[in-house]
Length: 427
Image 1: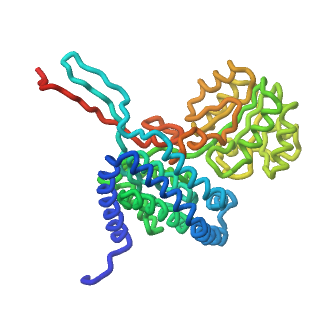
Image 2 (image 1 turned 180 degrees about the vertical axis):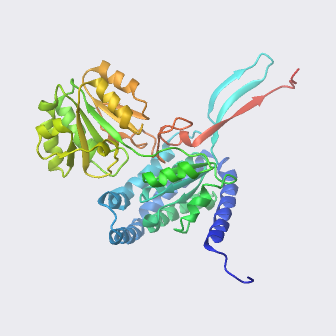
Image 3 (image 1 turned 90 degrees about the vertical axis):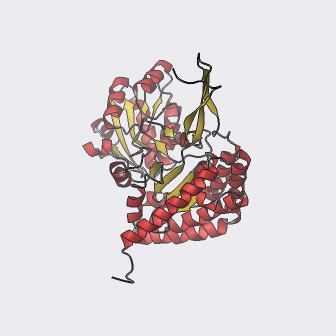
């Protein structure tokens, strides 16, 4: 009908295609931007975040208040909240990214063929990155900052619950780009909460080079199932800590409490604790005391329940659950082999830790498990790009192609071959 408004799906498709075109245009500029210009954008963006802390907090209060009214869980509200320290950390993260070496243009390998052709493999930007995330507004700064440094452009689709906070942060990033003379379209944010926008992003093979999902299992499962654009896989963070028979009791007690309770809503939080039967009676009671005193619910097998009557009986699904909350599954296992078998059967190949003074056992544990991150005598909460010295991360990839573990600046690049000749032709 003449003059009729387009339906919401058509309007969203038009909107997303326009964003894609602008992103591709900006990507051509970012791909050849100088290191100085990219760093200037990051430093200016960090300054803008500090200068607009009050505005970011006000936007965040709006989001948190709405989230409370919707009945979001404590874990989701914790992910959503932006405190002064978290805002300061976002700004510092951008400056840390600026201080990193620029990966673009780095020669990874070079050689000369017998015919005189000189071949080099050189890092290049991925192009346009689509980031789909839920209640973590800090992802806006991390994804934007890493993309800029690696010469990429990103299209951000934050969850409706964090939309105001994310927009406030995005405005600071765009202010940084403008100050550095780079196109502000390098950091775009989908302006609608319409879920059809996600569907459009998953089919935008003409404009988006890779999709990075950050959210709950249902969101990530949908993206992995439906996306025609390549994705960085990260389904869930079902992380394990194993206390070996040769564990130091004090280290075990300190590490386990941190691994579970430092922040329960992050993907690197330990969800299942495994304890060697040889030391369970001695080491487990004080650890459970610490956890329960900190507000953690314990779900244990029969052996754990015998050691502490406060433990609730674990059911089979507990060994396969990423709680993202103050709940911990605890199981007594026969030995190292049993611990490895349990993790192999129930883990998500994200992050696992062993606590032991036996270095041979530690090496066997780290070699046998096919997880993206394995730790010895350290908290699983170190599963974070910032803690790896990457400045920040755009996520933890658990797939095996292209990127694995924390996705930082280097992981947001690909490579091309440059071949230099002197007139050679192929016979």
